[in-house]
Every structure is written in C-alpha cells, then in structure tokens.
Image (cartoon, rainbow, N blue to C red; front, side, top):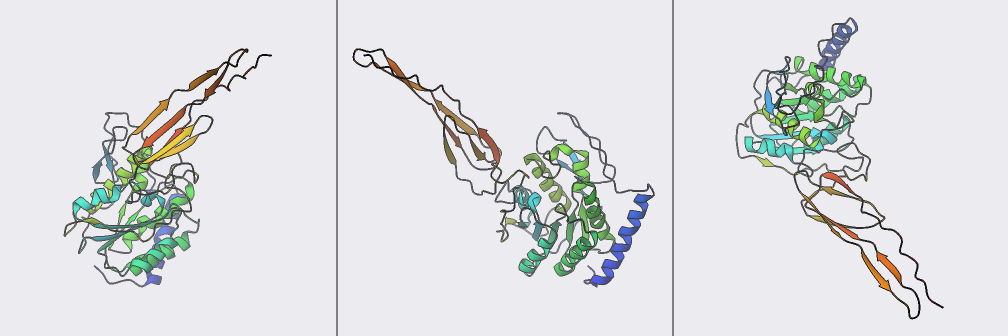
Length: 357
C-alpha cells in the first residue's frame, strides 16, 4: 500500500482523467456506457456482461441467475476483517435495521461489518462518518454515495478525495450508481477514474448490474427491490471474498437518522418508513377506513374477517326494523418491510327503525 497522497495532486490527476473521458464521450468514444438493459424470463440464463469478471447467484426466480458485479480483476485484500460501509438509503436498506442483507452476506465470510448509512445523504455525509468513526480501527472501507448528486462534479470529486485521504491507506471499495438520469454519469466517471490515482481503490459496478437487469430496482430506477438488495449484498460479498480473519459479526451503527425519507423512495408515511425490530404488529381496521400495515419480506400476513351481524327489533304494535353492525377486519403481521395496504369491506347503512302508531 502506498502512503497517503497529497490531496491537491490527486485532484489534479483525477480532474485530468475525467476531462479526458468527457472529451472521448463528446467525440463518440464513450467506453463507460452501461450495457443495454435486458429482460430475463423466469428460468432463463442471462448473457454475461463482457466488461466484468465475477458472478453471484440471484435472490429470486424473477431475477437473472447470475450477474456481473465488479470491474476489477485483482483479488481484494485487507489486513483484517473490520469494514466500515458508508452510504445513503440504498445501503441503509441492507443494514440490520431493515433487511440485514449486507451482514447476512458478509458475516459468514468472516467480516465484521458496520453499515453507517442514512436516507437522502450526499457525498458530504461520508466526511461526517469518517470524522466520527474513522479512528475505530478499520481494515477496509466501502463508500456508496452518489445517488443524491448535487450536479457539481468538482465538489463531488473534492469531497470524495478528502474521504479517501482521511480513511488512509486501508483498501477502499467505491460503488457506482444506477444512471437514473444523465447527470449522475459524472459521478460514475469520477468513481471509475479513482483506481487510476489510488492503488488502494477498487470498484463494484452497480451501474452495470442495474443497466443490464433493471428489475433489481423499483420503478424509480434508483432504490433496489427486496431481491435487488440481496443482489447488491452478494455483489459486495463476491468482490470482498473471505476475510483474512474470523469470526465475523454485525456491528452496531451510530448513524441511523432516516427522517429525510424512506429506503424505497416512497413518500414518508406510505408504509415504507424506517421502523426497526422484529416484533409482531396487529392492526384492527373497521369498515369505512383504510390502513397500511408494514411487514418484513419473507413473513406471512394473516387476515381474519368476522362477518357483519344484523339485529332485528320489533316495537310493540309496529313493524320491525334492523340495525347492521359493520364487520371488523383484523390483520396480524409478523414484522416490518413490505407494504400491505388493507381496505376493509363496507356495508350499507342500517335501515331506519319504524314505530307503529
């Protein structure tokens, strides 16, 4: 590992490389464009991505059985098994307060994983994490910050460079972002250029995975589906390989403020919020109202509907009347993560009671 480089010198080199890449793009020579999107049917094997070298199993039958995950060919190497992972809502969705996919993928390989990620965070968040936790004895780091891009390539480059230099000489993995809009190509241009400046940098190409297999993302083209989160975690696991020491563990996070949004991009309060824990929840819904119950992926939802009841009364000397009581719908779930909207059946208003003369 080479000593920490001078920030200004690194910036100059990266800026020159980015400008060179921009020039090539302008002349029709863009070599960093993602592979065209492919739609893979159930049971079909996708063609390999020619720009990558590694494969991982998919999470479900509806996603391809293998996906390419990395742009580097040199095996990842770290002096120990403590890894700090920094990101926004995409990485947060794999943390143990949500799906826990990242720890599930890495802990069996011997890694001790700390996921420090919050919703709607830009590149500056990386500096906050490094300054708070950078001296906690990390052997490796991963930075996945670029989706919330401020459309200022120079500012992004400067801040990313500061994160890298403050982390020091440990191996660092950078992750590209899905190109849901044209501007974020500038992010990927910076990220993919960094290994040419720092020899402790490698890249996981999430851009290539999501371009080839868009079904791993929600309709916004940004946030991964539950299956996509598993694919992301497996991509990182394949890139890192086995840790040099063991056992692994899932470390506690210090940064857990997701009040700025949700992990799947839906509006706050739509049922995709930032709840944590594994306790069951029970929601009772009465006719005429609607509710949203959140359940963790892979669990079951049991719905019990008690039928409406009708009571008939006959006043003395008059005709009978009836009163209908609306049914109660009880929905029991076994823990938070997939949104299940529940709208109970409604009943007609009760018939009026008529009293005889």
